[in-house]
Image (cartoon, rainbow, N blue to C red; front, side):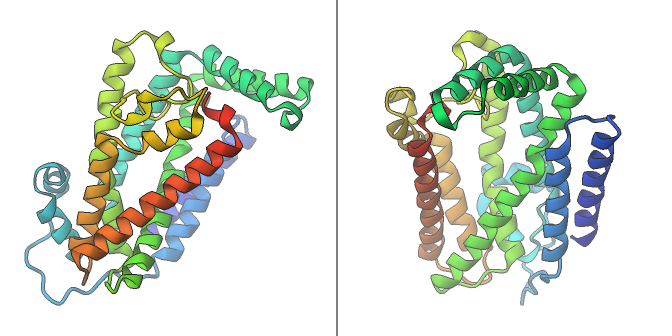
Length: 307
């Protein structure tokens, strides 16, 4: 883990130097993200891997785990309990997210995205930047998205922040399992977090790419569809412009979201050193509710962000 953290930090430094030298202009966010993720990973590498009392089988290969998480998740999570390896699955998610993000901007067009950003800024009223600064910011945004190199660099910025979010989720899962009387190592919780999210990300990104090129770009939203074009939740019953809070709440109830919730609960139960099924469900539902409350609060404060 330490070497991976060092590698992420070095990659962040490369983006930083490239931004200063104008090889990768505007890559500050990407540089900061990789440097921060590298430092956090290096610190977390001090946490030892769990020493299982009995290893029921040899570690599954990446192919076995990636395919097995769809068809035999019980076996995969039990294997992760003894061998909490997550790098390969995370790389798959990162690649799919990067490809979708890049394709989405190209398909929707930078002009539509910037125009939507302009309307959002105007709706902020006194919170919005002055008109001159606003137009300068939008011009830089449009220039960056029209540059393939800068767009690719900006898209890569999501990778370290995705890792950091999963690290936070793993830490909360570990604390939650302890509160429910279970016992789980941080890396067990992290591996469960990654593999319980993998099927959801694969379905959303792969089907999202298919829908992205089948639908008319004018029918896609520059903000709401930036993660996926797949609409499998109750959010379709509400207009985000008229009922933003209800739209967000309903969007949490869908096939892939409930599938991910079940996988997380199952994974925490089977991937822990000691845990009951109730503990797994308790932690999974608690995290789901906390995320819902956070998103609803942000939406209530800034409803124009999804309109």
